[in-house]
Image (cartoon, rainbow, N blue to C red; front, side, top):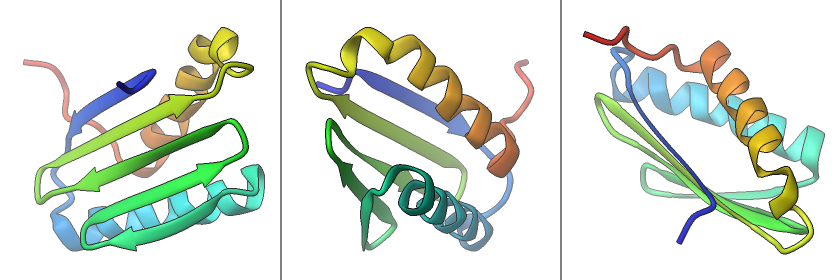
Length: 96
């Protein structure tokens, strides 16, 4: 089970959302020394102490992250940082 789970609706369409997740992949590689690989519309990533995936559809983005033992105490801070990055790359739809 994922330690961090974020699901957000978007209006970017599939191609634009995939482009934005690709930008996220570059950030993961550059800032966190992560390894990333695409499997269809899913980006899988891993780095020491964490792994996860981002699934992209026409209207939805689902991000799951599993944290290692040493990173779990920082879960809230990590989730906040991820949310901020997603906000800049894939704006979420306003709540109804």
